[in-house]
Image 1 (cartoon, helix red, strand yellow):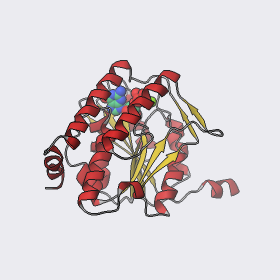
Image 2 (cartoon, helix red, strand yellow; image 1 turned 120 degrees about the vertical axis):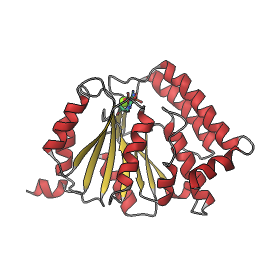
Image 3 (spheres, rainbow, N blue to C red; image 1 turned 90 degrees about the vertical axis):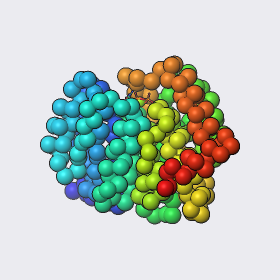
Length: 270
Ligand SMILES: Nc1nc2c(ncn2[C@@H]2O[C@H](COP(=O)(O)OP(=O)(O)O)[C@@H](O)[C@H]2O)c(=O)[nH]1
Ligand SMILES: [Mg+2]
């Protein structure tokens, strides 16, 4: 009994989008179901991104196992992670949630970090918590060396494009407070796919600055994760690193070429 009380974490109403593309083998059904027992205010919205395996069947069975806290959205055609996450976020923005985020299906970031992120959002003025894979003593960040170094190059580039000193844009664990700026930043499909996190942050920063909301530096928090692990079965490879660099250049052009920024901003807030 005491254990149950200890585990019960009452976050404000939170919805987490879990994008799924061919995740039938990797998705840990029990981990999601067990985690929900500890927080009745938490909801998972799985987005099946046109999977060609039995992911949809798995999501249907998950939803049946806990219909009040699990739902799914089925995209018939594979649209990429960016669009899958955007569709999921837009769906939950229409509903009554205070915190809205996304989490990779492979649980590279363990689910318990959701509690830590929400605690920050629920007890501060911060409106975004970003999972950050920083290798510090006492933390367990298991990342293949090559992916780590490629990731560091990319993250440095992304931070320069954003002109925000952010350490890790690419970790698939982020939770936002529901705000009008977030809604506006999801209005249009992203121009990029794997680096959509960078474009989403760029949009949020542009919109918030235009509205005179506090600078992102003072309302966003990077949370150094206690644990993170590269999970086998990633579909991201060398080619994606190169296309990620090209995508980042595209975001750079949207933000920094003369006249583009204003047009880009107008397309989001009009
Ligand atoms: N590869 C891939 N992943 C997708 C797609 N749509 C959604 N996802 C999800 O994006 C998340 C991250 O994928 P993963 O292959 O683990 O990428 P990595 O962790 O960056 O190596 C997982 O939850 C996938 O199921 C897609 O079109 N392709
Ligand atoms: Mg992964």
